[in-house]
Structures are given as C-alpha cells and as structure tokens.
Image 1 (cartoon, rainbow, N blue to C red):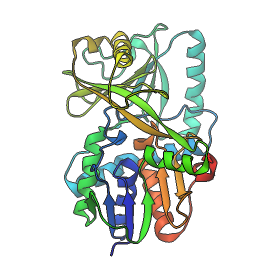
Image 2 (cartoon, rainbow, N blue to C red):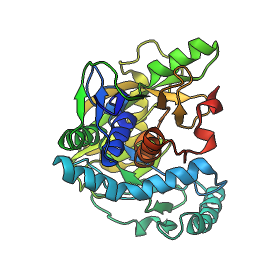
Image 3 (tube, rainbow, N blue to C red):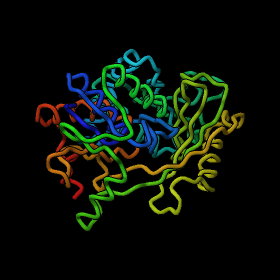
Length: 349
C-alpha cells in the first residue's frame, strides 16, 4: 500500500509527489505517457513574476514560490543527480515610449516594497544592460529597459526529468498504470478540466494551445531572458534558446505548428538582433490547462469529494510549483489548508 496516489506526471503532479515524499509519505505517480509528456514538456520555461502592482493573494503566492525556487530545485538536483536547468538570471524588457517609461519607474518603487527587498525592478539605459554578450540587449524605442532580478528560467523537460529522478531516488514510484491506493490527487490537466466542465454543464476551464520554438545559439546561458513584443526569449543552460509562445483558444490540431509560430519567431528576431545568427532545432505545440478563474485550482476535487485536485497552471505552473507542492502535500497529508481562497475549485465553478 502507498499513502498517496497521484494521477498525472506533469509539473504539478510531480511537485506534489516530491513534497509528499519529503513529509515521509509513500507515493505512486500514474501517467501512461510518462513524466512531462503533456504541456509540462514544452520549451519555454520563463519563470516570470507578475507586475508589482495591484497586489493580491495570487501574486503573493507566486512571489513566495519564486523565492523558494533556487533552494528547492537545488535539493531536487542533489537528490536525483539530474540538473533541472534552473537559473535566476533575471529579465530585460524594452520600454516603448515616455508613458511606459513613467509607468516602469513607478513600478520600481512598488517592487521595492512588495518584493520585500529580495529582488529588484530597475529602469536602466540601454547601454547599461547587464551581461551584454554578443549584443544580447533588445531593441528599445525609448532607449530604456526594465531589468528585474526576480525572473528565473527553467528548462521544462530537464526539470520534469530531474523531479522524476529525485522522486525515484527517494523511494517514490512512477508507473504507466496501477490501481489507486491511499489518498488520491488528480493532476491531469486539460482532460480533467473538460470532465469537470461536462459534469457541471458549464466551463470550469479549457485548454489553450501554445506554440514555441527552440533555437541553437552560441551565447552564454546566464544572460537575462528577454520579454519583448509579448514574446519570451529564454536562454537555457544546455546552449539552446526558447522562443514563445502563442495563446490560442480556438485551434484544429493541438500538436501542429503553423504560421502563427513563424510570426512569433519573426517578432523575437526583430526585437533581439542576436537571434539572427540562431538556427531553429525544434518547433513545438501543446495545449495548456487554463481554469475559468485563471488561477491554479487546488483543493478538494469537484467530482471526487474524497480526492484532491491540482490543475490550471496555465503559463505559471513551473513558477508556482514549489509552493503548490508544499500546500497540497500539507492538505493531503494533514488536512491543514493554507491555499488562497481564490485557488479553491469553487472559484472556477
């Protein structure tokens, strides 16, 4: 017998499994496709904070999770012997005009308070960008950039593999099929959102298609990532650079790429001149789970009262993972609930 059965080996399922193991529980993760086979096996891995204004419980939860991440992923790497690709390398964002410049400077002040001095949001002239390697700085119409030190990057596939290795090393089991035992967590992404929606005859959440590309570029992996023209450009530890992504509510084929990705790549190359020297090595498409509330869905499962749910990590799943694992393990194993009210399943019903 095991104490906890987890359906789904995406980032939420694996994170909760790891946290349960750390608390002394025995754990089995069931996924017929294996770790990181769904949307968690994408390319981008931008662990970007919310804008430091209009603070709420979702932004606070994400901030705490981002601050946990460095030690959390280091522990996982040490336990399983596989590098997760994590790095808190910061981010550069070009500033379009005088209005945007004034707004960015105002946010620098609120970041100093809301980020509690643990990270910085600064406005810098273009020629003062850090790690100026191979003209890595983006175009900026105003001549100014936002530089924050809270943003980190993650290689999604390396991270899922590292978590799987750590879980196995600590005595957990990951299997394609098994009978459920003990307490049960559903972390199956879009499939579960669709089943809950059908049972309640209204949308509980949906899948949003994303397209991304992976490039090879001879550039230092510790340069900041760039967010320009609504596109993430993320240098990874293995010498690749990820570009993405689209957000498509309507689509015909969830796994094919098309001209929309071509446009994303073109915008990235226009914003970051260094990418003109890069070669595309992979194009990826997948469907990410987005709850109706747009927040993660954590708590008791709406269809299975004796079970739990961890879902809806749309765009922020890897950044939320350390804290999601912690609070869900606490709820599953002890019944203590430290989950924000806005993350409860009822918020999406």
